[in-house]
Length: 64
Image (cartoon, rainbow, N blue to C red):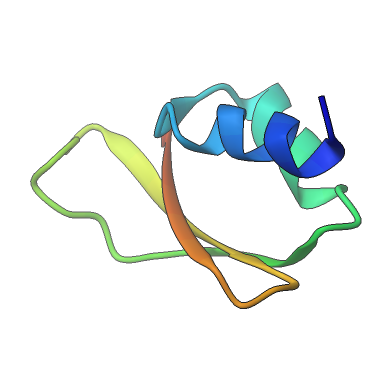
């Protein structure tokens, strides 16, 4: 499995752990990870925007 596939497999779950967020932030395929404004989808979670080097944008949620 390629690094990209492993990364997207984690991101696609949407709700991830702090450790997984650190792993994503340190990945060479990730351009930036920024905190985003929370929404009603998961109100007790912190939302993050994950932008990849290829321009794709994902959202992940981490328990506060």
